[in-house]
Image 1 (spheres, rainbow, N blue to C red):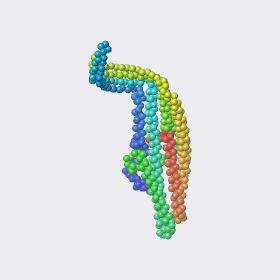
Image 2 (cartoon, helix red, strand yellow):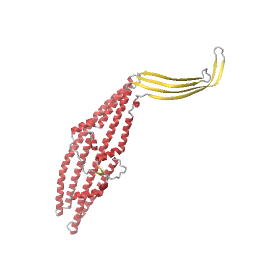
Image 3 (cartoon, rainbow, N blue to C red):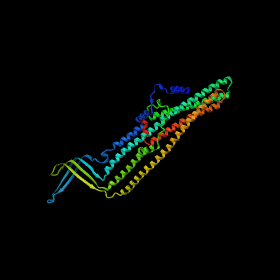
Image 4 (cartoon, rainbow, N blue to C red):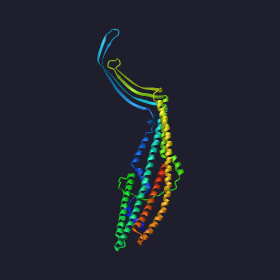
Length: 438
């Protein structure tokens, strides 16, 4: 009870609980996903891939050009009649031509290249969504890990504060007994050294808490990095009922990296279709509507106006370009590599999942053992304290009992955090990391 009261008072003094906003993991994630600069940039890039999915970008739509021009020529002319041989000369003959018109060019068929281009743009749009999802999952995992690291550092700070209070009480007892002659100066100096060491350890841990708090502010993109962060959780909440079979099945179905690899294979297949489209003929429509005005200086016709429509169809086929066979071979290799990459990634994910699963189970078992050790360490410390008060235990032995208690608490804390990190990583691989948002 005494330790609980001291811990609560210390929290009030250091963190100012009274008027602060309290953050939950969900609220931290929501703020971070809304404000974090990296997430905002990756969403902008996703929007670019969405904007690119248009019929015009794929080549379905025609091009329409408006053009106008003027041409003038200034010449000196000499003519000779065939029958009489009479010659005539004219200087400064100025002929003019003015034209304006609309020209429409439309590729009606290009060996299925247009269709392949449109499918490629759609696949790039889906890949943009997958890239965004991958970035969001990485961010959730990073912020969640830091959130629980902050809890870990705060718990460790409380443990060090408690250890410091024990050392301070021991120093007080030694000082009183030194005055009455029950303890030597060596005992007094040793108690003071131990107390100062615990104070230094506590001060160093305050730095670790501040570092984690600043990192949380950075991930949430808070404008003030020195903003105080009061979180509602005080313990590391663990999910100890994960199933390997369910995790692996979810990985095969939901893993974003694996999905992106499959999309890369689809893109490689579409590249092959684009190259093969050159084996087919193409059909293009060309049409225009224009006006032409001609002015002649010495011609029997002084002016001429033309206004009309022209239409044309062009059909053709590329018989040989020297590169097609090589490009098709390379495209087949690209498809094969995409397939191999997907298989390699599946194997790597299975290896990572298995490694994390064994670490997860091992940490859970260690946590059970360390909790049993803590009970023994608490009992051992209580017995040592009673013997020390009676003068039946040396200061060094008392210090060792205190250190054993602190070490037991530290091992439990480390096991809890390591288990949580394994849990986060397992959920990230299996595509279930977003459950921390719920």
